[in-house]
Structure formats: structure tokens, C-alpha cells
Length: 365
Image (cartoon, rainbow, N blue to C red; front, side):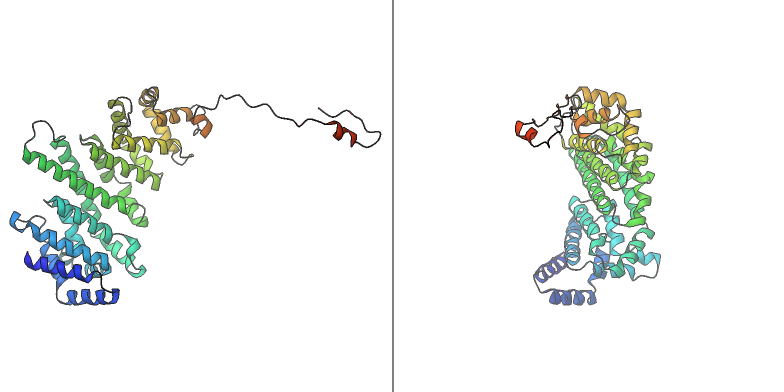
């Protein structure tokens, strides 16, 4: 633990150095076997309580290294020759730690490190295809989705953490919440950034099944995070509306609004759901499939929300009157305003005097 603390201090001291000097420091650290130490420290997702600080300090060093130059760890992950070696790379160990780790602090650190590693904006063109191909071929995203489904099941069984729950049960519930939020943050950061590679998992049953399970579990903060990811997915690709409809993702959202007294805007989750409905109502036809699905399958719920003065529900129902999306005037109740009478400029005597001789003095109209 003290050695890891010393390495963390050295990495912290190297941070304000000139980029060339900082690069020289990390090259020397790599030559001394620091990356091998990273893999060894992260090999086990959970450590005894006495050694839990090892993961924290190791991940501190990993994050400092990533903030300097993520390509150092990406190149090391690609420089393997077997599946066994690939399973021991830092990205693979971070995925395993996020899926099975037993400390909330390390889950947050692992989520942040994965977001940096998987961000193509920080990749050189030469490494982008190779690293992303390796990440998908080695099953990192399949492991993340499997962990998300298992976490959703655990949250459903754990309840809302209140009532007669013991301290141990409450701590286990909060650990699941932290893991779920970390997984959702990693997946959200990859939506729309990996091109064709991400299309399979974005529309797959593993993701949408886990999202629906999260929307049905009792903790509102987790439901809000799931709704935000659904909204992000639909904004990225309208075709994903078919996946949402197939897995009945909208039913638990509308049920929550109705259960909360007709859509009161008193929680972050309610606000996220209302914004999603507003996006669908104002999508200008891009999300027409989702709008028609809501009107056909959930009309009674939308009518109940509209009766409770929930504006997005009214927008959807107003747009259904003529089979198209509502115009701004109709969505705001201005479609019945009487038209203003046309205004004509008065014809002055001076204007009449300008007519040529012999012309009729009678003006048309």
C-alpha cells in the first residue's frame, strides 16, 4: 500500500511538468514495469478490507496516466498474442472490476477510466480502429451488458433500501446503485461514437431488457438514469424506437407519472420522462413510429396525464387529431384564435389626383 502511495505521489508530481518531460517520466515508468504492476493489482475484482486501499491507489495512478496519455495503456492492451494475455490487460481488468468490484470508490474510478479509454476523441487515427475492434471482439461490451442485467435483477430484489432493511442490506443496495450508475455512464459515453460497432448492442435485447428491468425497480435515481439513456438512444437513432416498443419500455415510465399524482414534476425521474415525451411530440416526424406506438398502446394513460394538465401528453394527443405532429400553434392551444382581418391602406385624395386624364376614378375592390 505504501509503495502504491509513493507511485501516486510521483504521478501527481509529474502532472504539472512540461508535456515532453511528463512523457519521459511515463516512458521510464513503463520501462520499470508499472503497467505490469497495474495488471497485477487489478487482477482480483475484490480484495480483503486490509488491502482495499491497493485498488484505490492503483486506480489513482491509472487515471493520472490516462489524463496524460491514454495511448500508453491502449498500445499495451493491443500488444498481446493470446486470449489469456488479452484477459489480463488493463481495459479487461477495469471491466471486470466494474462488474464485480465491492467498493463504491473503485467502481467510480473504474467507470471514469473506461470512459477515457473508450473515447475515440482522444485516440489517434491509427489506433482508433485497432483498439475499438479489440474492445468489441474481446467481449468487453458483452460483459458490461451482462453486468448491467445482473445489477438490475439485484436492485429489484433489494427493494428501495428503506423500511426494515438492515445496515448490511442497505450497504449492499447502495453498492448496486453505484455499480449501475457506473455502467450506465460508460454505455452512455459510447452512444453514437463507435460507428457501426455500437449498433448491435444499442438495439440488442440485452440492453433494452436491462433498461426495462431498471425502469421497474423501486429506486428513483436509477430509474432516472435509465430514462436518460433511453432518451439519448432515441436522439441518436430513431430506429431504436422499435426496440423500445418491442420491450415495452414506455409502460413503466407512464405508470410512474400516473402513480405520482398525474405527472407532478417533483422528481428528477419525472422530469426526465416528461422531457422524453416532449422530444417525441416535437420531433417533426423523426420519431413518428414512437409517437404512433404511444397513441395506439398507451392512449388511456396519455389521456389521464392530459387531464392532469401534463403538457407533453397534450402535445401528443393534439398531434393525433390530424394524424401528424402538432404545429407550435396547436400544441399551445392557439389553433382556434380567430384570424385577424386584413388591413388596407386608405386611398387618399392626393393619390386619386395622380391618375392620368380620362382614366376612371373607380378603384377596384
